[in-house]
Length: 428
Ligand code: CAP
Ligand code: MG
Image (cartoon, rainbow, N blue to C red; front, side, top):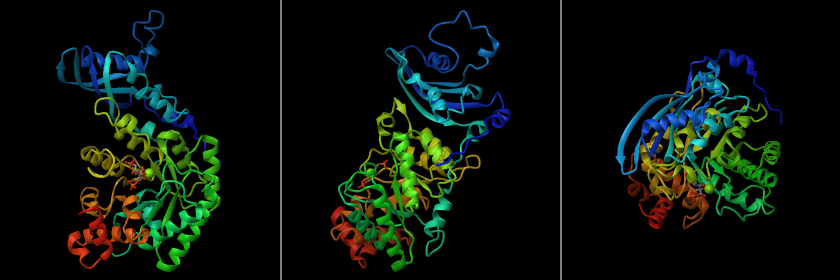
């Protein structure tokens, strides 16, 4: 697969020296919040734990020091102080040929391990244009994805999308997987994705799965007139991933999926920039909770969402607005939605995806918070329907229709048996 090389020289000349890349952190420091800020600046730019006699006074080095832009003290505890610090990193210190790795080595590098910081959590980031312009942003974005699927028109133009993850996660043969996908498509989903741990195991090789699913989705389209796309999970080690991308695309894949924490963000940026990839990229985030879940330490999903959009993810999992099977924080999820939808240079909007323990009764609340720009995904909530996948998908669509028509699910279920059975099984 041919990759585009950026003309770095041109971009660096446009880069204004004083533009800062801004990181915001929650800190707990054994001494003070002010010291935390200074220590982060030293460790992540031109200093270390002590003064440096030989090189310290050199002006071309000193001007690269990160700057403390703001500090806030929250509370003094026995033995530590908590607060928030805002740090400005000089854009000149980034090695942009190295890509996102260089950004992360500073904004999310050694600082997490500094001993005097009991806890530190990276809360937010703002990229100056000079950094953002190294990245492609989503190739399709919400608008592009809607055009492919056809939901820019219809009874409810630009409505939320319904998606499914074929379950069980693993074990089905490619044909069995495709048959389940067909049932879901006939039932009314817009989008079907591989589960994060389905790659190209011998029982369901990626090429075979791609072809068989495509055949069944083509058949569903002939029967219903509706386009449904399948996101093929290409996540793998570098060379294998690019082989799988090629294999999936050669077999007609209409969407690719990447687990971005596992592969690294730069792989996503390289995919989005690759002119040979002419399909949307669905971004799953498995393993994120290892560092996003603690409220005091690690990395919030907010910087991750901004990086994913900048790198070119068309769709990203952001949580399910305070419900579902995964740990959830509605206030954060609303910010994540904004990060994907609000203006960010010329980047297209990325589609917020809600997933994990969802079923029809969850839809009104998802639409209330997510509006039209939400992909509502259900695995168990579709394939676990008492009458199987097709009826499960119908129940999801009925719940969405009811919500858009402003009718309660209870009321709608009186004339929609699929929805009624789902409410009966999982409650309303
Ligand atoms: C959902 C899912 C997703 C989770 C991940 C799963 O399936 O496919 O991976 O949503 O969480 O395997 O659990 P169900 P998040 O619908 O059967 O729960 O979206 O928060 O990253
Ligand atoms: Mg999954």
